[in-house]
Length: 381
Image (cartoon, rainbow, N blue to C red; front, top):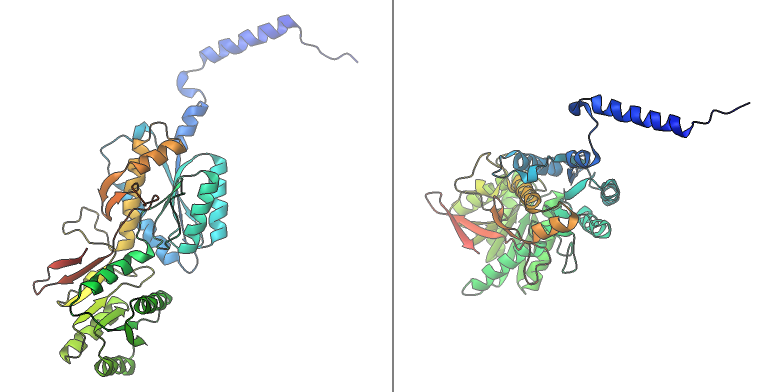
């Protein structure tokens, strides 16, 4: 059997025919070239717990991201189109590790962000460092998530120690010095964790822990707490409860003239569940409240309902600005852009570079109060 062997002349004829056919095809119907195809697939990946026990937190943060990405910008973002991809981390560190490794292997993700929980945020930052993927941590407060050696990881939100630094400065400013402290906390897992941290803080300040009790949301417990406050008389009382419970306890204690002269309400919800679940809903004179976010007096639309949405909104602002400042959209250029950002967002001033920062934006906690007219006063910083 003879096999067909194309001659050199036949090969040249077929090549010429292919060139002629290519010239006859209209330009608009040609296949997209690899470079253009890559530009159209450039991706911003947002990793959030959209299922599981922390889904409410993830979805609230996602709302903030979506609002931030939807705002019109004054720049063209290097004439590139970006795909926003929300991925479910399930609140699981191993899922986060797998997602970041996959994103890096695909080579289309310019920057990733999200994972608000401390454990997943730690894994995300470590995996990003290993894979060379720029990563913006949002919504996690653990102090050791990043450090001076971090190259690819950045963090927008406060460290866990920021609240206690603010409380410590406030206590140190009091004269005469206080000797005792009380803590009333809610039943949620977040409130219990907050109460434990506050108890440790109290011990570190060498204060007498006069009161450490749970608010159980029933009438008997409510009046038991009031009696304990009257009996033990802590000089400083911290309400680590949901806003409605804290406000009820505060108002009744004020009527009975038994509340300590210095009472501070602090938010403990893992994710605000409604529009009223913010510290600003207290609006009571003489009651101090700790907050990670100062609601703008004239907020630009859209109105953000809580500090978690504000975190996501600010993160979207930062990501878009960083990509616009990047010259060639490589990892190195995105990192350089993040390191040179110095701007004001809805969540506060953002600056990732400086002595001792290690890509940690030094956002403070605030201590505020309201006067009789309902005007907010910032006590610290």
